[in-house]
Length: 126
Image (cartoon, rainbow, N blue to C red; front, top):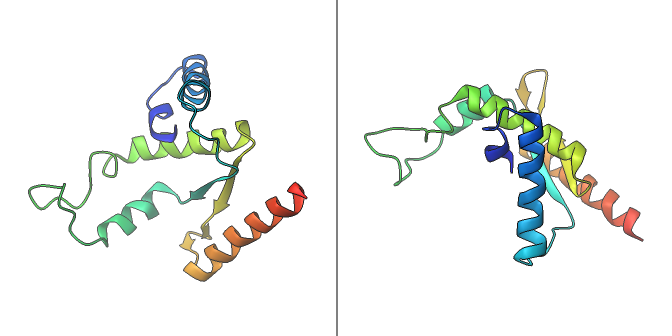
């Protein structure tokens, strides 16, 4: 949803695509709807820095460190904006902000935010 919606400029076309995709996956194909989808919100430039720290990946050729989407800052920005919009549109999505004051939070801090979100969800389901 995130990457494909980020490629569609028209809001009406994007909304129609997201509705179609949701219907296709869950109503036509019968894929179970997840109780919760967690979007880990990281600004694109920080995400790109993290990708550059990854080990070599076999599917990347000629010594490249990023795939076509990872190296496209405009695409990453549009995809992130769509993710934020999707969180506001689909009730089973939740956003976890992983950066504070331009610094990536620790793994433990992000884990605690995720666990807190899960606990809140479980409390609301009772």
